[in-house]
View (tube, rainbow, N blue to C red):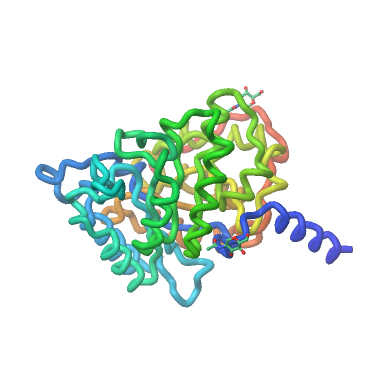
Length: 334
Ligand SMILES: *[C@@H]1O[C@H](CO)[C@@H](O)[C@H](O)[C@H]1NC(C)=O
Ligand SMILES: *[C@@H]1O[C@H](CO)[C@@H](O)[C@H](O)[C@H]1NC(C)=O
């Protein structure tokens, strides 16, 4: 009986998921947005601005701190993702995306740097005419941008839709996903799609979304605050029925970053890691790895493995019951 049930679950997951061989377990890595935002002021803040140097330093830290484990791909935090503000403000004369000056025009070199260290490189694109921060969007350039990413050796793309027309989302995400497929380069396709539908009060068709995306953002960005973490989890608990049957290998709910940063106390970080592990969502940290505490590092690397080994990477959990309770969490652990 048990085996029959298991088979049923696998079959269902296989039917919905994007079939590109990527993200068979929830991906893990590091992304720039929550901590470094759109800081492009490399003249005055060279250590923290969005530049190839920042990403190379983070890659080095991830190696030194043993986040990247080439002998154990399932446990490895092996993605590094460049969020918005990596590109030049203008495309070149042929309409091709260019990197900003602080990358020296060399995303390909950065990709080589990552690949030599068994790290995969992710890039942020927006399907509207502009990105959230006013950089060139991909509207009208889907095929060319997909080709450019493949040519640069990119392994992951986060498709955002800050400036896209909400009526276009259900055709544009599939179109872009198909162009990415046509490049022949497997990429982990992370989508902001449902988030933008939900903002307009439209219930997303997660079954369709899972055909084109390896993960999809079901709620707003998680900020480095306890309120933001609990709101996101509350939303997940309220809405699991809409997306949980669909999530599985190759297709995951995305609940935003896990934060080992200064906005959450150690105990709050523990709760977040426990919840995010039980939800089987991609785990992307967005901390300054030059300042990561040993406690947070241990939590990120071990907590979900040792204490929640049975949950992580399997089917996502449901909120079993919501009880009115007051959770007292000390800001400073004893
Ligand atoms: C493209 O899609 C086909 C059919 O779903 C799949 O078998 C193939 O692995 C995909 N290729 C890439 C590069 O995503
Ligand atoms: C979850 O549902 C409860 C009860 O309907 C509601 O009060 C709360 O605002 C919802 N939370 C979110 C984040 O949607």
